Image 1 (cartoon, helix red, strand yellow):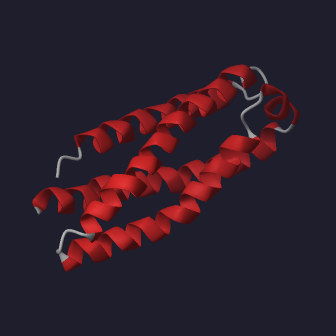
Image 2: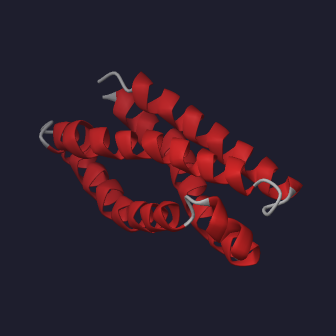
Length: 136
């Protein structure tokens, strides 16, 4: 199975997280508009990535006849539900400059929590899940 598109999307998402981090460090209030635009753009990539995983990747692995990969796929799918839900709630809440400027420290706390979980999950996929897929 060719998973290059998934890998490229990870690179795009990780880059967006890094850009967001830089904007936050330069000032949430001062860069609220840029931060909100970054969140909206990143969310488009994340939504696409999640949809293709749910519609193509996980079902293909679970139907592959490889019990190890099917189990791993189901585990990753189950774990991602909570992470994805938390991210989508975060993105829906913080996609306007007005709220960012009004509650910068609340944003910072939530961004650190949600984006750290997303970052760690993608790094784990890159380190464990994708190599396992490519090996079959």
